[in-house]
Image 1 (cartoon, helix red, strand yellow):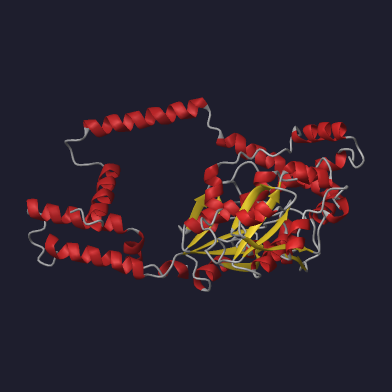
Image 2 (cartoon, one colour; image 1 turned 120 degrees about the vertical axis):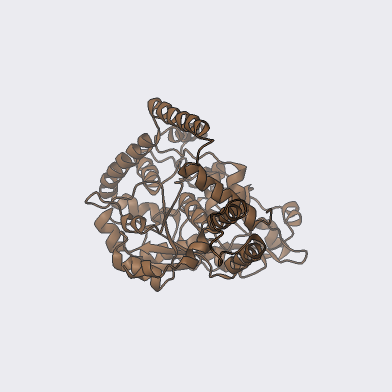
Length: 464
C-alpha cells in the first residue's frame, strides 16, 4: 500500500533514536576492542559519532508534530469520553477526533440519543481536541485510513483497550493494527453511555417524588443509589488534577461566575459556558451538590453524581476552574474570596420552575449590580435529553441489554484467573534462570535489544 512507502530510514531514526544510538555505540565499542570493523574505513569512530547523535536529537525536535486520531460515537458525552481523549492527546502533539455519523451508528448500534450537531459541539468543546472530522465511518476502512494518513497527516490511530467489533464479529481497527499505526489507551471504568441510559430508564420505573414528604424522598434517594445502574466512579485527586488547567486568575483578571447542576453534560452546557467565558478573562463554574439538585428536581436526580459532573465541566475548554459542591446562594464573602466581577445565568434553566420556596440565589449579586442574564444559545436541558430516551425506551432497553452483555463479558475476560498468573510468573522465572545460565555466552536477542536501548539512551543524554 502507498502509505507504507512514505516511511524512510530517517523516520525510523526519528521514532527509535535510542535503538539507533545503541547500535552505533555497540558497533563503535566492538571496533575499538576487536578487529571486527578494522577493515571498514568508512565507519565513524566515537569522536565523530557523538556530535552526530547530538544533532539527531536536534533533528527530532525540528520534525513535524505527531498527529493522532481517535473516533467514536460520543453519544451522551461523559467524563469517560473526556478521559479517553485526554489519554489520546498524551500520545501525540495534535489530536484529531472523528465523530461517527448518525447513519453509521444506527446501522451498528441503534439510534443515537444526540444529533450529529450536538455531538460535534460536545467534542469540539473539549480542551484536548484540536480538530474534528464529522461523519466518520464506524469501521476504519482502507480508503478512510489512507485519507487519514495522506490528507490529515495522521501518524497513529488510537482506541481504548475494550473491543470494538463490527456486526460480523470482526475488529473495527484491524487494518490500522496490521500496518503498525495503531496505539491503545486504557478504558475509563465506572461509566459508559450504556450505563447512563440505564440510569435514565431505571428512573422511569420509580415513583415520582414531587409533593412527597422529606422522609419518603430520602428513602427514595437511598433506593436509587443502590440500583445496579448507580455510579461506580471513585474520584481521586489525581484524576481532578489531570482534568484541571492548574492556573489561577491573574491579578487584574475579570472573573466570571456561573453555577448550575450541569447534569448529563450536553451541547447546551457547552454553548452557555462559551458565552460566559467571552465576558471575562477567567471562568469559574459552581457545581451544585447532589442534595441541592435533588431538592430542585426530585429524588432521582442528579443522574450523574457531583464528581462525575465536576469532571465533565472541567474537561470543557472554556472553563478555568470549578467549585465542587457550590452553595445554592451566592454570598458577599464568596464574591470577595474569588474576586468575582460578574455573575451570569442563562435564560434556559430547569431550576426556575422548581425552586419550591427556596431563596433567590442571586439576590446579593443583583444588589451589587454585577448580575447578568445570558441568552442561552440552545434550548436543550437535561430533562429534554432524558425525555428522548423515555420516548423510545423499548428501543434503548433492547440496545442496553445487548451492550451490557458485551461489557460484562469484557470485564470478566480482563480478570486473569489465578492459574494464568501462576503460569506467567513461572515463565518469567524460567527466563531469568536462562539469562543467568547464559550470561557468559553471546547475549540472547531480548537482552541484546535491552542493551541497545539502554546504551542508546546514554548516547542521547550525553552520558557516554
